[in-house]
Amino acid sequence: MDSLKTSIDATILNPKYSELFALVKAARNGAVYGAKVRFPHALVLREKLRIIIKATRTHARNLATFALIYKTAMLVFRYNPIPLLSTSTPGKEGSYDAFLAGLIGGYTVFGRGMQSSVNQQIVIYVFARVVLALAKLSVAKGGVVPRAVRDKATLNAWPVFSALSWGMVMWLFRWHPDTIQPSMRSSMNYMYVSPGSIS
Image (cartoon, rainbow, N blue to C red; front, top):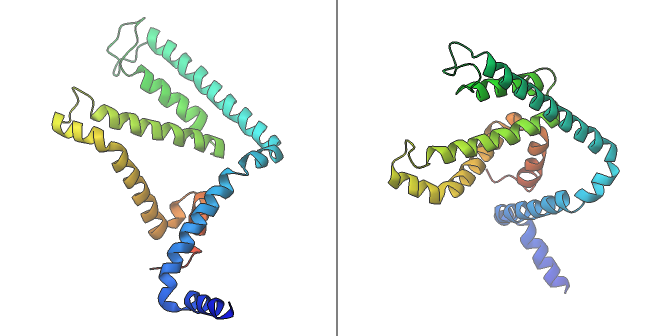
C-alpha cells in the first residue's frame, strides 16, 4: 500500500504531468464552483433577506418608473408628433415613438447617476434580449439575408452564439481581465488560474 501511495505521489509531483493535472484541477474547480454557487443559493438567500428585499424594491421601483416615463412619452408623442422624426399625424403612433420613449426612460431611470448592481443586471438582461431579437430579425423571412444563408444560420445560430460568447469572454479574461465584471473575474480566476497556468 505504501509503495502505491509513493508511486501516486511521485506521479502527481512529476513536472512532466503538471499540465495534465492543471486540466484536471480546472475541471474540478469548475464543478466545485458550479455546485458552490447553485446548491447553497437558497440557504444564502435566507441569510440575506434584507438585501434581497432592498434589491427587489429597487428593481420594482425602477421598472415602475421606467414604465411610467415610457407610457407618458408615448402619449406625448402621439398627440405632439416630433416633426423631423415622426411621419404620423396627431393621435397616431409614429414609427420612432417607441424607440424615443424607451431612450428617454432608459436614460432617466438606468443611465443617469450611480449604476447600481440591480440596474446593471436589468440593462444587461435587456441588452442580451435585444441582441438575440436582432439576430432573429436579421434572418427572418423577407430580411436582408438570402434564404440559403438564413436556413443555415437558423440551424447553427445558437452553437455559433454560444461559441462566440465563450470565446470572447475567455479572450477578454486572458488579455484584458480588468474589463470583466469583478465577481465574474473572481470566478474565472478560481476556475482557470488557480488550477495552474498552462500558458
